[in-house]
Length: 101
Length: 258
Image: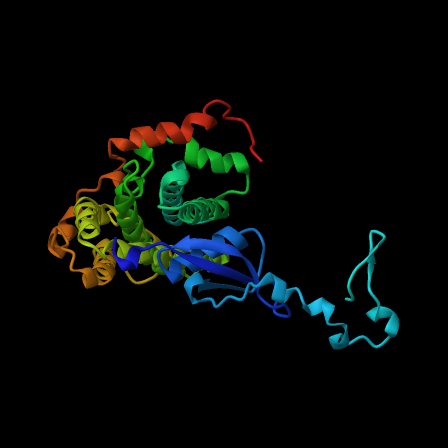
C-alpha cells in the first residue's frame, strides 16, 4: 500500500454557529484530507446544521495529557478571579466538601 | 405543471438515471468502502441521487402516487435508463469508482445544459443539486487519485475504464436535448457536441494518471447511433435491478409511504 492510500486518523472539529468556537466531536479514518472532510461532514454533520467542519491529522496534533498536572487548576484558589469570598470557598457537592472552584 | 412534453421526457429520463444510480449505491452501502466512514459517505451520495430524482419528478407531479407511477409502472423497455447508470458489479470497488466518476462527469454536462434552459419553474432545484454534485465529483476524483497511486490500482481502473467508457455514448444517445432546445426556442444542441464536451472532461480527469481511453472520439460519436439503455435495451444485470426496485412496490401498489 502506497503512502497516498494509507488510512489515517483525522480529528474532527465542528463549529455550530459563527458565535461559537469549533468543538472536537470525534474522529474519522480517511485516506486523504479531502475525503476526511467529506466523511466528517457525513458522520458528524449530516443531520445537524453547522457553519464549519474542520479536520486535523491526528499526527499533527501536539498533546498534553498529564492528568495530575492538569488537575491542579482548581486547587490554586489564589488564582481564581472571584470577587466575593463566598464563591472562593470550597464547594459542597453531595454533602462533601470539595476543593475550591 | 404544464411543461412541454419534450421537457417532461428530459426530466423523466434524468430522474430515472438518478434513481437507478442512487438505488445501486444504496444496495450494499455496508461493504463498499474500506471503512465505515466511506460507507456512510457512499450511503449519503446514494440518498442525494434519490433526492434529485424526487426533486425532478416533483416538478412534474405533486401527488405521491403520480410520482410512484413514473418510476414503478413502466415495463423495463420503457425505462430509458442510461447503460452507464445501470452498470453494476457486486463488490468491485474500482468498477464503482470509475462508473461513478464517468456518470458524474456526464451528469455535469447534462446539468450545464439544464441550467441554461430559460424556465423559472426549473430554477428551484438547481442550487442544491449543483452543490451536491460538486461534492460527488470531488469524492470520486479523490478515489481515482488514490487508487492510481499504485500499479495494482491503475490496472483495475484501466480494466473498468475499458468496459465503462463506451457507455458514455449511450448516455447522450437521445434526441431529447434537441427537442428541449427547440421547445424553448434555443440554438440547436446536438448530442454529439454534448458527448464531445463530456469526453474532453473525462480525459482531463484521467489524463494525469496516463490511462488509455479504449475508443477514439470518432468511434464514440458513431456509437451515438446505437443506443442501448437509452432505447430501452438494457444490460443483463438490469433484470435484477428492475426486480429489486419493484420488490416492495409490487406488494402494495396503492400504498402511500411516509
